[in-house]
Length: 139
Image (cartoon, rainbow, N blue to C red):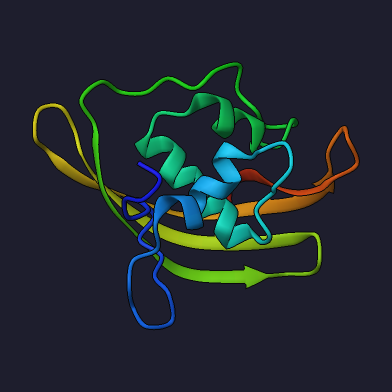
């Protein structure tokens, strides 16, 4: 998995797909020591965590004020791709990311999740500054 292309679809300046280990994997696999540097990177890594059904990472990157008790994955869902439409920093602690994620359910029906997500940057329990997913802007 580490050398495979990252599910989030991020590429290098020459347009080559980044490997999972060089992209979202470094944030997911080293959560305690390597937080995502910005809201877009966090959103992309959360998408990759959904692809790999990594509930621990999703819960750990959800702001405590909005965090659900658990994350359930729908059996048979295949994530097909991610398009980041915008990353808008509002100040050094708040940002918004608009994205479209494509998926296919177990019955083969394709759909799209279009969201404008809000993120906040705060110190975690260890004092490390970290971005957290807050919620979908505008409900």
